[in-house]
Length: 301
Image (cartoon, rainbow, N blue to C red):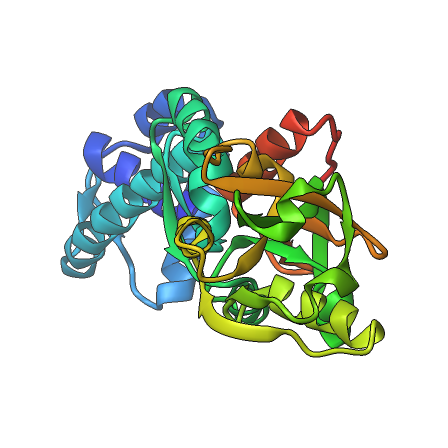
């Protein structure tokens, strides 16, 4: 049995005539008769009383008609809803976003996307990069933003494209001895109290690894998930910090000095990731195409 059997049956029941039903459906009368015969054989009951000139539904036929009408209506509703999804009139995306990234890059992007696709809902889940990776891996998130590199054991599980790469700068109080310098090395921060990133942020591990390569462990005075908290700690002369270049541009130069770091240069690399070989909704695919195009990437999904 398929949906066409039920559609043909309903039409015959409505017209009480095979020829009229066939004409309404734009098929031949033998074809519709054959369809009804197949349906009756599959159900094991006669659906029409054919002994009179105008066919009548049997008791079984009336029972089947009630259910068939519900099934066909539900199927047509399903087709309409599916068409809306395919045409991107509706849909939802669970999007994981580290707190330090969201306010900086995505309100404008989400606003532009929403103007084009007002029926698609983007639900933002604000967590650190490692938790974004967890969510993508286990399926609780559709798409996410992470700071690269991802955890090595997971790299083969993700598809991704980068959209930000910029160096970190040292931020010090304006009156700090390092503030007069045009550039410093990471080793110059060895004895400085450091306002640091929370452990679930990729930058936490990246910076610690670079410090370890230079033979020291930083003097961490606090860990946070907020740019502005690091900046305020620095402005209050409680320590120094490491912030991306784009964030540094917005800091008050009268209170905070931003100094390029070399040996090594530490980059803040951001990428949008999703699970490899997992089904992506039409809404998720469109979001990926939209955001990748803003970075000049022609993404094929």
